[in-house]
Image (cartoon, rainbow, N blue to C red; front, side, top):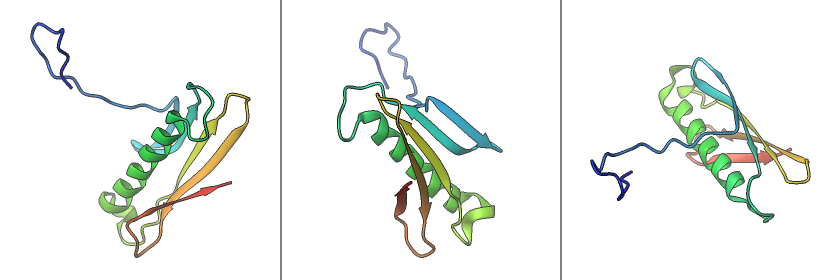
Length: 105
């Protein structure tokens, strides 16, 4: 990413981060995001959390040897709404499908 007001026009990396993260061996296992945007059916924080989760599931099932053959990596995610309610999600892939599935619990 480049900022116009930087004199040296240095490139910087954008690294989205969850509000809370639990990982095992540097691989995220639980994402938690707190809604920080105005009330909406699909808040940006929720979309970012699910998109990041889908990427993590695809990465683990494609690159990490323990999950490559069976595609059995499962990621849990929790979204905390403005009113304090929590939505729990499970993200996974089926064996012969590149799409990431999401279950709302």
